Structures are given as C-alpha cells and as structure tokens.
Length: 137
Image (cartoon, rainbow, N blue to C red; front, side, top):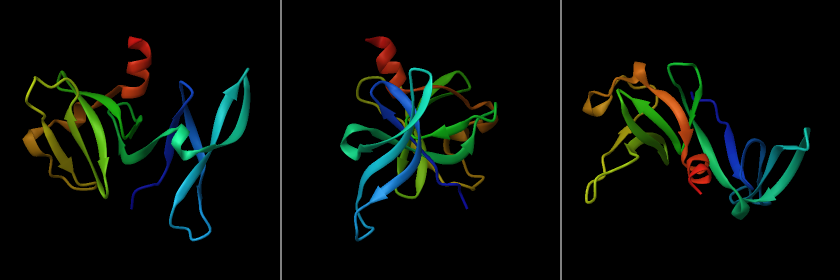
C-alpha cells in the first residue's frame, strides 16, 4: 500500500502538508494545514483549499530516491514528462507536446507494466510545473 502524503503550492512556495481538514461529514476537504518557512522560522498554518495547489505523492521515487509527486517534471531517457494523478493511479504525459498531440499513459502503482517501454530506472525529478512557471515569469 502506498504512503499517503501531500505537498501544497502556496504563495510561490512548495510546503509539506501536515494535515488535511475535512468538514463534519468527513466527505469534503476544505482546508490544509501546511508547514511554511516564514523569515527562517517554521510555522504551521491552516489555509483554504482554494488558495493552494495540492499535490499527492505517487508512492514512487526517482533514481535519486526523491519522492515523485503529481505535477512533477521528470526526465526519462532524455524526454521530459509531467506526472499526473487520476483517481487511483498516476501517469505521465509529454510536458512539451507538439501541437495536436498529447502523449498520455497510466502506470498502476506497484505494477511492473510500463507502456511505451519507459525506462523507469532513469527517471529523475527535475522540478514541477509550479516552480517552472514561477521561474519563467
């Protein structure tokens, strides 16, 4: 079974999520309790869900033992892919597709099956879509 952990992109920073906060029915996520670095001080802070981009851990690590999260950018055999999460599985899509094309495929967590013969041993997290957008602006 995969470890459930999250990160949140909040105010231009990637923050570990300490706790998910649900309503009284325990069915609707409404806020996250994040850990942020404020002036070199670690502070725990509750923020509304609509003010963050929540990222889920895939249960996988790259070749450098770095955790792979939804929206990470990974280099595999020289190509750049974006990790996406869809219900009960994660997958990759071409991060820089040619117009009119979009390579997508799913990878079941724990399965040895990898479509398109992707070499998972060469997978390396090189960033994420949020930090890449921040650097581009």
